[in-house]
Amino acid sequence: MRDVLDAISWIYIITITDLQATKTGIRNAITALIGVADTDDLVLFYFAGHGARAEELHYHATLGTTTYSPT
Image 1 (cartoon, rainbow, N blue to C red):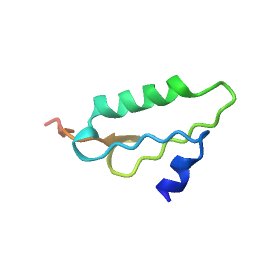
Image 2 (image 1 turned 90 degrees about the horizontal axis):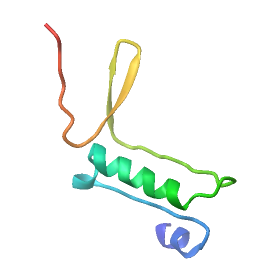
Image 3 (image 1 turned 180 degrees about the vertical axis):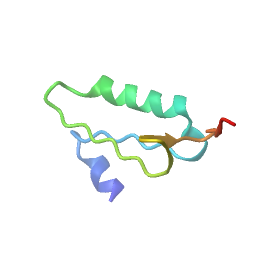
């Protein structure tokens, strides 16, 4: 499927995995995607990974995420 999507010139895909999936890596990928998007483009951000919930807030857990539990 990726080969089919890559062959379509107006579709731009950024995939980051494993050691690239740090907070900085994800931010850089989003920045790069925004840099090529036009104002009338639809941008889809798909995240498959782990997360955490603290009180009513939800967080995406990237590579290198540490947890903190106040005592």
